[in-house]
Length: 373
Ligand SMILES: *Cc1c(COP(=O)(O)O)cnc(C)c1O
Figure 1 (cartoon, rainbow, N blue to C red):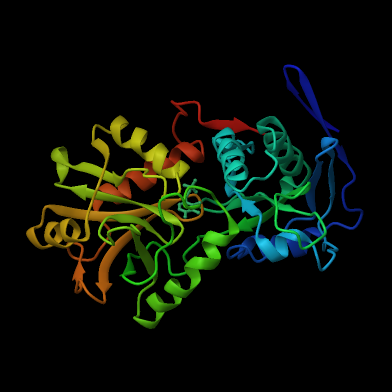
Figure 2 (cartoon, rainbow, N blue to C red; figure 1 turned 90 degrees about the vertical axis):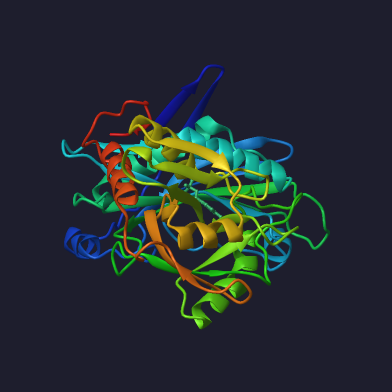
């Protein structure tokens, strides 16, 4: 039984775990080579919301299939949101998560945008504590391996009427994760999407919702057809301003050494406000680098690389941490490479610093870690 005090409210998550968990030899084999999002732990947490009773029935239960009525509202109209964060094993054996209340706040903001019920932040974090404590043996011990946590929520009202649903289900599942990119920390090539946009002003770009991903897949496929690893999104109105790369935010490095300066596209409402992005603004400043939010156009990117003013570009997000961008291709703006197309020193330094904070190698100077067990 896990209980988290929230001042006025106490969230109880009743615990009814699997009675036939994965044998340890089998689990160890999975943890030796987990990949990403392929294997799941023995249990999950779920909770229900109904308009009349609010949130209730939070419980930890064996991981398993869901039974859905074919007229379940979200399958048709897409009220579905998710989050992604990780549990890290530290050298002393303890397990921590990174800024989970930030994910909880963003989850609530995503719910508001999709006219869904908001999960209380304390229940979100309590669900993570309950699942990670129960399935703690699934948190890998090797460096660079983590337990990826996937909270998500969808409407469960049955019926084809188009309106905000009167019932929702929240679920939390967990998946051991190795390096996100199977080929290692190798710069990616990106395709500038001239034709498709991810998000428009007034749309759902700020929400972490399933539909944003559905709408992005065709552009990702187009990127692959052009030999690129990832798609880069431009703003919908002018098709000029750089927004994001796939499911990650972007950073541009100007200059080098002591004069290195970072710029990340500012949050206009159509970008997803990444927690890694936010953390790096602080980490860069800690390391004595200026880091600002700004606007970068396609021409700025191309000319900056040609003049040598832009020395590095990288993408950031929870799943892959930091990924260098080496090459840019597009249909209407030509192709160019970022410096020599390799991994630059600022990218490597920031990546190491952030990983060291997350894994407890250096002090948690901003109180970002949340101890679980
Ligand atoms: C989740 C996500 C990110 C990264 O957010 P983090 O909180 O850093 O993991 C960036 N862009 C999109 C579109 C995303 O869905």
